[in-house]
Image 1 (cartoon, rainbow, N blue to C red):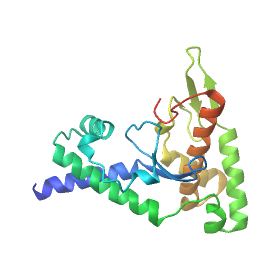
Image 2 (image 1 turned 180 degrees about the horizontal axis):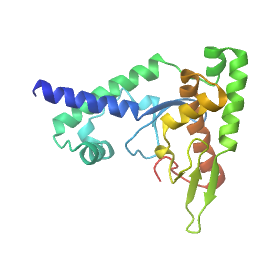
Image 3 (image 1 turned 90 degrees about the vertical axis):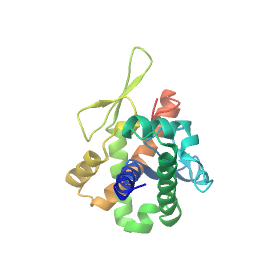
Length: 199
């Protein structure tokens, strides 16, 4: 494989990582990863990473890479997943996220404020039940309606938190994962949506 091809594949891996969210899930009791490619329960658990999965043998990953990036060579798909897994594993095992993340990282005062902001964000998210049984979501950080969580825009979310609540970028980034987790739980438990991320 020539150098130009490696550069392209590495850029794709960086995009995959950017489109993935590492967050704490209270039901799993551990960190999980919301991926840009479809997975059965909507996320991959921490224990999944490190199993040395083969990208070309993961139908959801392979089809996502083929459709989104036009990569069809199995060796290249395997390289993409292997590199992606190594980066995500570093994030999972290097940047531990837990239920006391705000207090641990930002102190008690900021922690209490961030918890309030999270509640405001969740309360200001409108879930509209449609006649066909589906749900649509209107979020406070944009005027658009969404049918699934993975279409939320993290950039709009961060700008909204910084401009409306005075949070820093880092604080907003950590709040993003918890917001997704809260909405995921609400949609599953209160509206019976089995797979809110992808549906």
